[in-house]
Image (cartoon, rainbow, N blue to C red):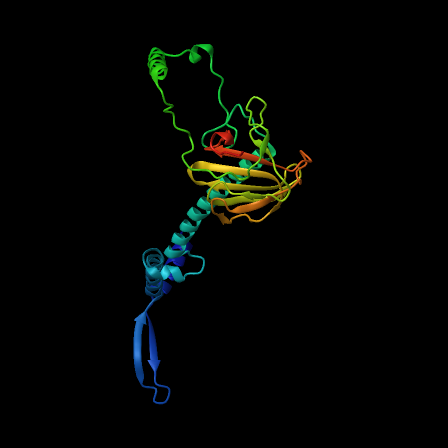
Length: 289
């Protein structure tokens, strides 16, 4: 016990022994500055300074704009720009997906790869529709009453009051004899018009060219998008006079008739008309002969 006590006394003596720090003039040896201190005072001062420096550095990093100059620390503006870029990339990805779906729909229209019994009103992509039961197919009392009233009104009507689904005046793309009519039963959602070679094919209305290209089965094909959700398709053209993205006027020449299509060797125009994603009979709105 005496040895341990002796060691403690020696350590305590070293810690609390007073020392003097003196600064002298080198030439005259005059005392300029002197300071009395011990090891304990030095330890306390160094520890306090370290704690203060750590606290000050933490405050600067956390609560002042100087943190932006620290390497590896993202600034507020950089974070804001990253957030805006992420939102823009999401929006661009959504637009790309919509355009891809739209182009895929146009491709199905051109190739005829459609289930015509299940068409969506919102797009020309075939939509899934659940089968209805016989109970669901039965008309309600209100429906039966409405049918009876409509039947009575139609019985004494002298003029047809129904309005067509297309309100735009459509221009005939060509004039000629219709060799094959529009038929949903035969799944032929177009009409075939016999015309002379190099006959100008005109736009049925003002619109934008969304597709102008050659296909193996239909030759040169051009597709126009018009107002009111109308899309017109012209196939079997010998050559095209408009490119994709061009804006055309009503009656403007967009192609020349020919025999480039693989479906038939005769010179004819394969013409389709779509409204709000539904194929419609072009002869109901356009006079071809």
